[in-house]
Image (cartoon, rainbow, N blue to C red; front, side, top):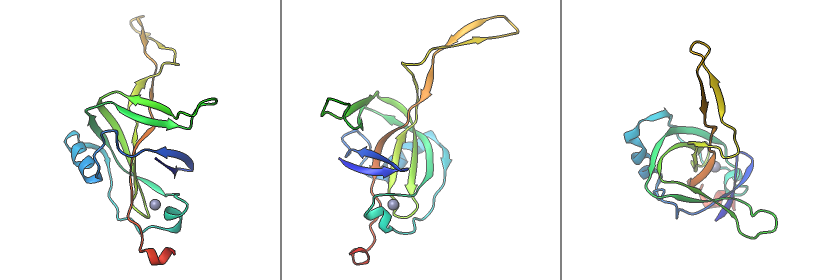
Amino acid sequence: MAMQTIEGQPTLVVRSENGLPMKLDALLSQMEPFGFAYREDFTPGGARIACTVLRDHRMKLIREGRWLARFGLRINAGLPQAGSDVPTVRVIPPGVLELRLEMCQDCGAVVVRDVSMEQWSGGRPARLYNQQTGETRLAPAVMRRNVVIGWYSGKRAAGREYK
Ligand SMILES: [Zn+2]
């Protein structure tokens, strides 16, 4: 486990016991059959001190698409709650997930987020009223998850530059 700063937020990143492929290329090829809703490639410029020392990356969206999670994912969702030493664990059920991949413009590290829609237990269902038919129906409250489920390290610059 390692703390990374992602978009200015300290985020606990766990090593892959969660079923994500070990290599980014493998993840991309597993996503390919679903098609990508967004796709952009660029060449990272090279790790900066911010990346290697501060672990502060300048992330840019490279892919939006879907991926089949064959098993449920167990994710450390953050720091322990008050009065507990155990990090909050979040379980994401198996199935097709909507993923958003962002790459650091400098070192090429990639963060993988699950942004699937899910039922929101704290939400009240919305009452939808059709003015033409007079029909009313209830729509469950849904919201987008935003959970970091994986992290692929970028290339490090030559060690001598950052001694
Ligand atoms: Zn970086």
